[in-house]
Image 1 (cartoon, one colour):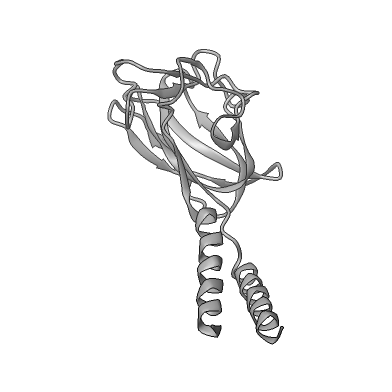
Image 2 (tube, one colour):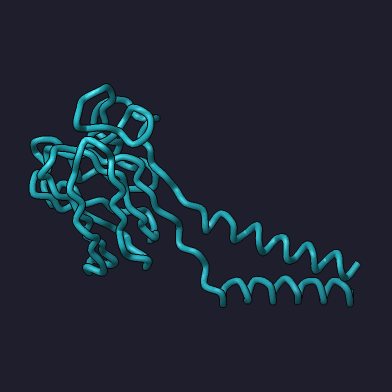
Length: 184
């Protein structure tokens, strides 16, 4: 019985931690053409000018599927700022667009700049722009020399992974529960 409780406790701990480490990839395929909805995919888009569209339009090639997002002619640093509902590890996104258009990410936590990505030169072949930062962020903005002439696709981020101490506390609590049950 004791071994069964230990196995159940370990399984519960892993099951509780697994969803916290999973990555989210927004491919925008479930969107209709038009503005990205205010709270789409765990991100607050309400103060931005990002919009989704589909269909063939070179050099704005999607990385996957047919739908991607762009800022359009009214885009700028202030209209590209996106806020996550909770702090995440932002991995990056796929970028395509006109040659000569440069794109990078600015990463923020509690309003403070904590990281910047490298600069990616856009082309008709989508390129991965990694955030270059492994810490938590609660928002990011896109920097570009031409906001109207690139698209973004397959935006990727992961929920915060619990610290090892949190997992140890969970396991200790489950162990105490098992010990109490055994004595009771």
